Amino acid sequence: MKILKTYLLLVSATLLLTGFSWGLGPDPCKEALEIAGTLNSLRDETLMRQAEAKIVNQCPDGAAAHFVTALQQERVSNFDGAIEEYRRALQQAPSFARASGNLGLLYALKGMNDDASLELTRGLSSIQDPYYHKALAGIFAAQKMYPLAAYHYNEAGRKLTTDASVFVSLAEIYSASNQPDKAQEEYRRALAINPGSVPAHIGIATIYLQRGEADKALEQLKRGEVAAPQNHDIHLLLADIYKNKGDAKLADYHLLLGGKSKIVKAAQKPIGQSDTSSADHEIENLKAAIKERPEDTLSYEKLGHIYRAAGKDAEAIDAFREAAHRNSANSDVYLSLGILYEKKGQIDEAVVAYKRSIKVNPANSEAHLRLGDIRFSRGLFQEAVGQYTAFLKLRPESPDIHLKLGRIYAKSKEIDLAIASYNSVLTYSPNDGDANREVAALYAQKGDNEKALLYYKKALSIQKNDSEARSALISMYVKSKQYDEIMILLKETVDLNPDDPVNHYKLGLIYDFKKEYENAISSYKKSIELKSDNARALNALGRLYMKTGRLSEAKETLEAAKKADPTLEETSVLLNNIRDEFNPEPRKIKKSKKGKTKKSKKSVKKKKTTGAAKAATSKAKK
Image 1: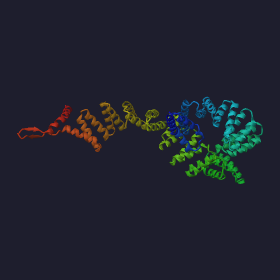
Image 2: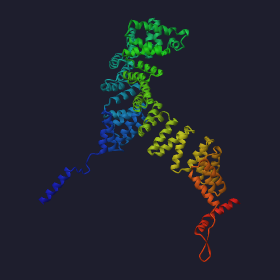
Image 3: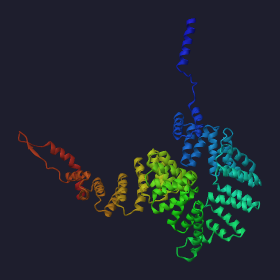
């Protein structure tokens, strides 16, 4: 008995030491879900992709895999696709807070505030994500639930300490709640983070004006003007202040920069007309100011904008370059300089200008777009992808840019990313024929024929003359042997292009296959009528004549086919068969040793094989 106990103990130890799990090992889907919950903390793109690949590998059909797919859809701005994947993740794991919170952010982005509130609240029940707080605060602010909005903006501001917009929004809540002192304090916090925050400068100036402190408002707006010299709202507020002060000259100047002065219209008129004098006067004033203060960057910026409005590109470039040389902090200066360089064909200089514009203000969407277009035109597709992606984060409702991105991904064989981009195009522009046709081709590459057919049909419904979509559909129907559908498409094709011999030939082939011989003959003849040397149509018609026993017509038609294209092998074979039918070999008679004659085996055999042909020939002669 003691030996038996010892043996059992040894077996147990062996099982434990060799890792035998008894079915109690870690759940791969649970582990994948835990990894998914930490993805937001990864900042390295390589590590992020590795983690995502591990999640999908461990539990490809689980909630975590759907969560990963949602993140990938978000990266290409396919927000509808991302929403669907987050929903699927939550169907399998209802308590997955990160999926709820992210879904809430997308709902908020789409203006679905009730759904967003619910999901963001669920997310915040487990994760104190500052972006969830910020989005929820925005919803409460829109609903004028100011105490709740203030609470969530404050919570967001605890971690988003470098996001000036949080404190601007909080200040606006306090202003709306008649708490100007608190509002001013939050505006100042925003300016400490971002001295170029236009809403903060305007907000403080507005509070000063409400208090009757016009001089303080003026000083604040001048600071705002330095930060954003092209901002119309700042210039229009300055114009009002100067007008109230009785300074018509400065009031008119700021109306000019605010886009509401007669000077703007005058500057846009052809040079030589008398009413350009106001613009010229302002230019002279700025030149005088620069002469007194050569390092005054703002004067150069203003001068550049006035020159550009007047169509004086060379002078505008010189002024903007001087501002750039003095390290202007205005992103639009570099953007304007880049546009002017592009106009002159100085693309390399434009690239440098756009890069500086983005460096000064990463949220300058137009600079991202223009730089992306240059990269795309030069074949630098990965760099173009980076710029287009940055642009779409700022302006997602841009189907033309989603389309460009989709084509780049398709060209680099990243099919899933390409499809996601095309779906984004169709979200904003569902009747884009090119997008429908191109995404259909991608689904066909993936072997998803059902979706490929769906989008090809959509492309054709948008544009019936889309020959590429029509040809692709016909090819798919041929492979699946859907001949009735092929017939419908080919008839439509013939109706759309009645003078194309190839379409009539193809329709003839389908009639031929379906044994509708008279219709087939009619189609082949129409093809030949349109192109008399159409060898394939001639060959098909000759073959059909043979099939129906019209041998003399077959011979004539096939000879025309051979003349049109001597290389067609089938034509030669068919002609030889007809000649055999018309000219059978004569019988060979042999004498036997006993003096009797007998037919050779060859002639007997030939008689058997040509009997049917003689009958057909006799029928034809009759």
